[in-house]
Length: 133
Image (cartoon, rainbow, N blue to C red; front, side):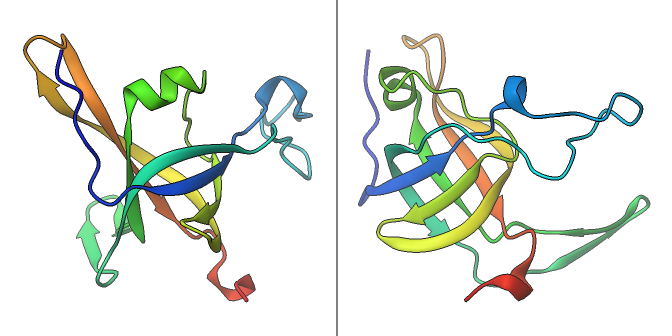
């Protein structure tokens, strides 16, 4: 099975969400105050920042593009025993301290002998850019 290579991989530090230990409001089914997080996990990833944030006007309202993405290999994720999820926090991209959250995913690198995708593109964005230092 071919294992795809990342171009210029850097260490990416992720702080995964811990849903079982997060207190939820029983009526609204949303986290109360603060979401619990697991310990940091460092993975190699290929980082790409978006050139600009363009607004897409849709029937459902305005949709803003992500700030960028990180490309991970499924082999690295399984070796670290981690499953990425929406709202996982990224705290470092190649030594650069950030405060961004995973927004959505796109599987990539479909090889016939791999039986499916070998890469996953995790798009990230900042939830509150005013608090950035």
